[in-house]
Image (cartoon, rainbow, N blue to C red; front, top):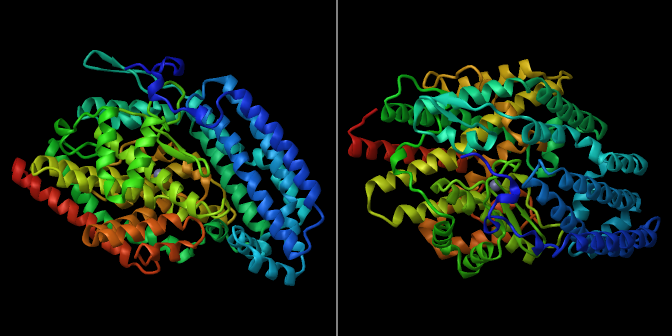
Length: 603
Ligand SMILES: [Zn+2]
């Protein structure tokens, strides 16, 4: 299963970027138009933002320019995501990014000048504002942390350079690193990032799985110092910015934008680490017993409980599953699912140089684009449902909110997506009376949905918090320190239920999220809200669905605490978190019972 080149991928498995611009030429023309518009905008408003009316008019005019910037940025950037080995596309994207950064720099006066306006005018502007009200309020809250207009301009101009650590990481991972093939029983197997993460980690053949693990982590070792240096540059930079902007520490600085308290952040990490561990260790022991493994290692954790049962699925079939699974959300939602398949919003293909994992990128008041690596597995259907959850959020939020208020706080970003995974599982579990199938669905929830968000990303969150603690105290990190921290992290959670083999400590090298601030912990926060809202939908039906749609439509107009309350979930307490851990425990209980019944295996 050698990966093919991008050009050899069947077109129906690719996304259709011509939905943004029919031809590349049109993007360049749009960029030229935009440059003229931004110039006119700056001439009109620079030095003029001293009255409430002018401020609101300026922000409303800016709102018309921003979606176009985003369209151009996505057209160029998304193309690179599907082929990092294509230097032409990368050069083009460099050029486009430079141009767009210049435009942002030209507009940087807006925020700085608004903050210099007389206090009375600012108050009046907030009252007068419609689409830009929350934006203005946020800006005022930021005021204490803003630097002089000149400095802000310099920082905006340096924006691309400040992003270099992440570029280095991605280039190492997607362009430079190349894995050696390995041999099992005389047969040679190729190895690659996506092959390892999407295939070998789930492989039922223990020798094959563990050898792939060995080859993968040994190769990572050759890049650990470069990767650590890039990461250290990133977190050091964040610390510097936190200091410059007068935050008490780097956590306060990073949580500020999310509108999340330190208490909400810490609770997520601490409660899950402590309360979920016993359940997951039990699940690991069940896996070990079911597969008759001599020892249970970190390399075995992604094993499906019942691999022979893992149903193979075609892309076409995935459409039907997702459609049916999400139909509880209503006709408009199903119509969006149909459009996503019909209009090719989704890039399913697997090819050399393509970004790993999956993501969804929405165009304001248009469609979304979804990237994934399709492997014919039921788990991929969950990925499609997940990414369509982001698209669904955009659809409701775009319709109801201004461009400024479109995106929810990072804290809740993964709620709509994980909700869809839960709904799909619920639908599948109900669709058959077969016990083996039921166990397969429940164990998919535990081993994919909850494992991913409550274990993988939460371990990352725990580790990340330790890194920032070091940085906050004026220290720095290198590969040795990061390896040590990650090993401690894994050992703390898995205890004696799971052995952590040499190499697993380099797992920190696999995650791009570390370059995006306090992102990892939000996966479990979103899923906590989704789980509680799903249990409500299961119990109450239509009224809970309506609340969920209000939640989706509120976009970024409310802070996460209030937004979650729209869905009937109070994240101001540890109630939803404890209830969600209990729910995961109940899933594992049932999986154990079913396994006793089906296979006579008891823990
Ligand atoms: Zn997501």
